Length: 166
Image 1 (cartoon, rainbow, N blue to C red):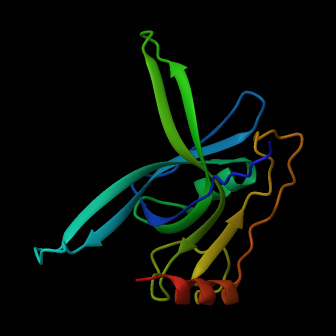
Image 2 (image 1 turned 60 degrees about the vertical axis):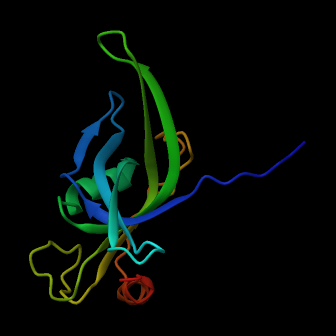
């Protein structure tokens, strides 16, 4: 019996901390950071507007990890997409631990035209977004990965700005 499944996550939010770039013993780059997303709604009974913040653990591997480490800073607004992954381990004190994180394949750094405080990946100050992706297999194995260079596209940035719901 063959059934299809989908494990896809797309988020737009703000970094809650600076990215932590490190390397595995075999030299593979891994970068982790926190992302906060907000949801607002008005209750059906006409009450006051409500807001809830969700916090997400984000992980990038290889070239995308290096780009995230170089380009991202606490407070930046980013779009990321990837997959959910749950890991189990034993802590130093023997306690069983579990975490769920988003392993990203794409990242777009979103910024407004007037944002001069952020570093851009190109010399053009009119770029709205820096687009980066990770063309890798699901294991994160360095031997089987194609490294992709980041793309900086002003046309893609304009399309993203039109699609963002805020």
